[in-house]
Length: 441
Image (cartoon, rainbow, N blue to C red; front, side, top):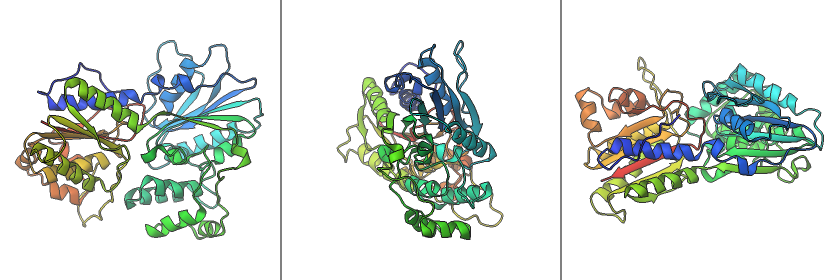
């Protein structure tokens, strides 16, 4: 969980940047944001289902806020080690299980099967609360007919390494699933479905978050085929044939099974950026929020941020110093082929952003930066992200670390770990995606 400290001063840039990250994460915690969107208990049953990195915290928020005398039960799946400690006295009414992210595993498959079973036999008097957050695409895996779990694992890995953006990845995932792309909501009919979601995607498109298991899908089998072809990803011949014939199509807007369903966003990247901006202004910083929808190659986005910071530091822009430049979104990392004998790189998109930024800043004075994922995990490592300081390159050179070498093998972790510049928070139990703060003094 993020730590809470008094607001730091401009004399401690590292602590200041970490404070802004903590404020952004705090704004997205489920317990602060759920109450206004909970419907009253129904005449029939209340079943809670869901998936995502915030799933455990969202389930606890519902348990804490749901009337004590109203029955409620269900099952939510979250990432391994992402279930928060249970507060003393909180009644355990919703089961939380854990599975693998970003590559699905057998535990996620079993959870998806059980969740789909919970939707059987519901009536119009029943209520389904669906708790959705980022990461649900991998955690809620139920392969389409003709696909094995091993197939889905391979396709997921290849998508993650391809440089495909989140919309492209989830378009493929929806059409290779028996539960995503509105299929879960269709299975709940005729019960009322209320989806409570935390956005981790640019633009807050609820049909993209966790591949929209309770939301109608406007993409098509043809779209999925085009993406698979574009990135050179193979699927079994039988599945390809089903896609070509449109047999794996998802429920579309206007589908009668989804009528009357509600979707509520309780936390978004923009809200977290605005919270961090308010905290920065309270410290006396000029504050500029670029966007919560920035996409592209992480290292290239890092170079663009470096150019903005350099201009501000040199007094050549409208950004007045001292200032902080904030942004969010979801960048991508295209994994480079390894040279024979080369060690595998470690790191995620936040770390790669920092590599690109450090290289482009080239040691300019007065610029610090933090990039971190708001779920506390950058890719598959144990850090949330990394820090860039004016002396990053100099300290790295003293340890014979070359930024070009680490970029070539996508090894941000191996670069920043010896410098002591990894940002390590542990799971935060929420997820509104990338957070970046660039401080120019």
